[in-house]
Image 1 (spheres, helix red, strand yellow):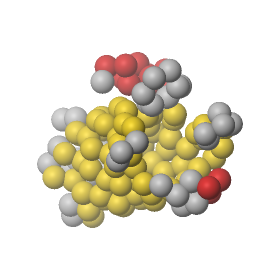
Image 2 (image 1 turned 135 degrees about the vertical axis):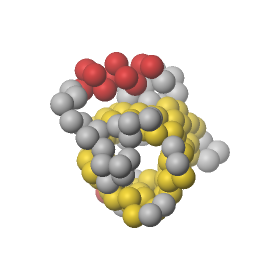
Image 3 (image 1 turned 120 degrees about the horizontal axis):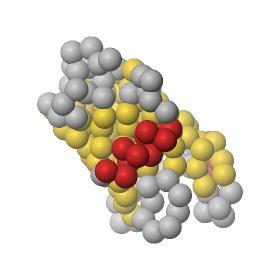
Image 4 (image 1 turned 90 degrees about the vertical axis):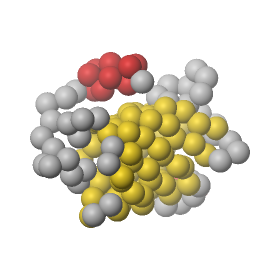
Length: 131
């Protein structure tokens, strides 16, 4: 369970591309200190040729009440070095963050992150369909 709404912990997530590409699952480790968020993300994603690869990123952002915003910056693994902006909202019991991601002048899509306590991938996908 969330402790006083603090976001520190392990989160499971999905993000969707525009069009027919399959959603990508990821694991995020968040650390909340005051209004600041930091952490890391790892995911298995498709590269520009459609091959699956493991990629890693750092994140840095802020939280203001229910609003959560951070930038995910890939670390160069498999040639991925770009940054992605995430803007979302935290639900009332601090167990879900949902919103939109964007790469400026490129594309954007939706995302959902949940705390994994007792939840499985099918429940995450079901929740993802709601946003």
